[in-house]
Length: 151
Ligand SMILES: Nc1ncnc2c1ncn2[C@@H]1O[C@H](COP(=O)(O)OP(=O)(O)O)[C@@H](O)[C@H]1O
Ligand SMILES: [Mg+2]
Image 1: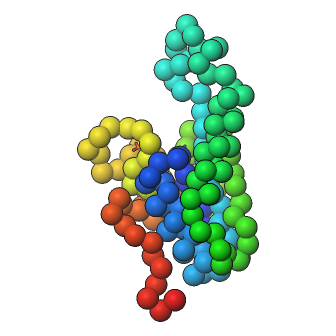
Image 2: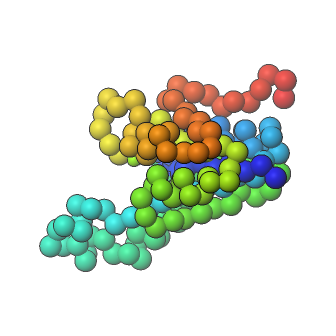
């Protein structure tokens, strides 16, 4: 079975990427793997309050909530099977690249939650575009669902 991997971070860009990936998985009868990577915020690690700010249990909880909330916003009907949810500790781009090694497509939004205003691509979308060995789809902000006129 074909496999489509999509990255989510709770942002609007990621939601649009997820919507596109779901529609594509439906059209192809492909399996869908939804990846969310989380890590200790670097700024918190360098602060004297690090133990308070970066409580690992709450970070894990937030990661699960991000995954659940992301999937709750899209219509998952018509998929060949229930999407696989993968929550990974570590930087996002390597997590996505690893999950997509044997995939048909890797789908990301052009931008995510963070980064600097004005960039066309965020660091994660840029890194996967450079390093992926499978085709990458980068969903720009204005893109709509790829539902096809012929079904
Ligand atoms: N932590 C993450 N886990 C999984 N996918 C992610 C993560 N962060 C970003 N992505 C994916 O990469 C896309 C672009 O995000 P990113 O490059 O981080 O932009 P920004 O710099 O605006 O945050 C997101 O829309 C999402 O699809
Ligand atoms: Mg980001």
